[in-house]
Image (cartoon, rainbow, N blue to C red; front, top):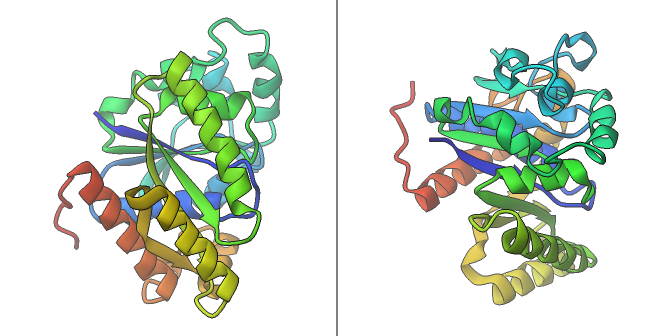
Length: 261
């Protein structure tokens, strides 16, 4: 059965989508079967996986609203090496529709039931807000991966998100855990960034991934080419770091990597 992980932070610009796409590609590199669920109406994870969000016949919108089976909307991102449940601006319709829908917090969880046994990992790229789509992701997930930029206001936003996770645990998904807190876009030369990094470790301990994602130009370039960094520039520092993150995640979940080519 696939482990479902919501990648979320209500603060934008922290590397959430970048992490989802590149972690998915890195897990696929280790021969795991991976599904990336794009739950952000911006569709950036879809485009970053090499899928054109403007040409979709079915998407996450139809799957969540029960207008199609989820697997009917799943596409193969050949260049990236994993499957994608794509999204585009149509997903804003689902966000509005969910407000009055029955079992509105569990729509994604129910939609994933028929496919989760086919994958080792299902990664959900959440929108940069604590809305009904994000709530669906949290209710559907086994764990939450929180990308956080090591900057001054980061800890304040993290506290709000953790309170939401606690509420979901108490009322809707008792099995939801913290997969880990990931430090992103980190600059070792920046004293403030290093101070925030130290604060995170002092406060959250082992919940903070040892892997740190550095600022890297090649990582920033890769989405414009519709591919993860691992396929855009395998030798780059960004690619190597995301492979390290995948390896750390596998150790946490005690899943051995298959032999890579």
